[in-house]
Image (cartoon, rainbow, N blue to C red; front, side, top):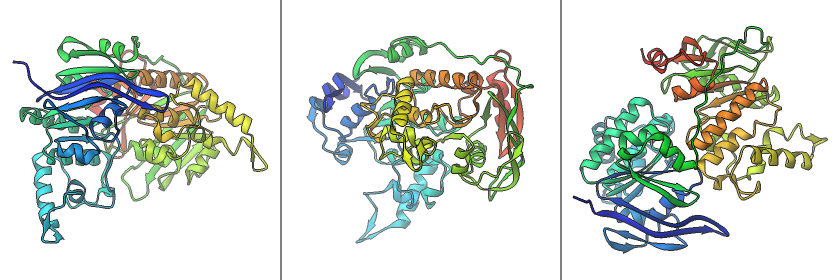
Length: 498
């Protein structure tokens, strides 16, 4: 029996000035289904969902909820109608507790006072029912990114919504946490709740979604039951052409000069201990490990963003004290952090300002910036890395997540930097942008740039890295040489969790 539509969006068009972001989009979600909304970065997915959630008003078009016309004026209005959204950005109040975040704006009251005891008890019961290992009384700022993501899921579940939009909900979750989320989604579906699921991890779509709708350049280009399509066809719908998988080429670095060496590195007031690691010219080393294994902390220790208790960092076989990121940049070292919005970009500045920032010192004389040199650098990176923006003067905070990630990487691509550290370089980007990032990393390696890459995607490390180092509980437990043929995902996973 055909299920009825809970939501029907007809002829949705959205323009920002002269730019058309959505063009006559027809989109529907059935009662109790999981619908995957797919598309490359900038295809219009987030804009369409923000219209559904009342954040944006469409330039033209209409929305029907259960067959009746509606016009949401803001997210609270959408929520009152049973529509809620988990955004890709972690929209939490860091200095409040987990319970206070979940009940924000709808606090439990006893008379005129907030009943925190009841809020803590009900929140803990909710978290326990979802099998989330989180203390309801904990301050959010003290939690990991993965647990913050889980709080957003719990908050949405607590709202008793009939339609939930999940935008990249697993981007910071471990394999086991992702499986737990899928179980929650199945539970919600059994209760008749509809879910719009947005993810760049294609394997997730086939694990959790009933149907898929694909946007490209602001238009619907395909719609299919997931059982009737595959990953290759999805990729072609999303970007208009097939993408070949990258493969690392076996190289011998034994004669290559050493550019970085870590000896007995210990994190101050932390659990990353006894790290010995060498990086040679043009080599790409991968860091594998489960969430919390210490990969991010290690990269931050190298870059001077995490304080060392003991140990020595050598650059070109010479001991070097790197206390701050500024010192690291002075040694021609770049860093693409895991959280691009918090640490990788200045969101209130332009695309051009962000791309030029690391090199303003070397492109200045007597304190005066060489503007022609800076402009040439910005244009080269924007055009060469295909950063989609109206112009380099556009605020970087207005770009799609994938294009922000390109900019966070692009600012290190001038050729000046010889060591680049990547923490989750392709998180939140589409398959087309991921392919471009892979090409860029391979080109940098060919130009003798040395790189260390931390990634949750084992296949990514296998496709890009000459060596893969496995971290577990803050220590290196194994190292694989990657010849591009004999190494298997299972071998790496066994070392990560075994």
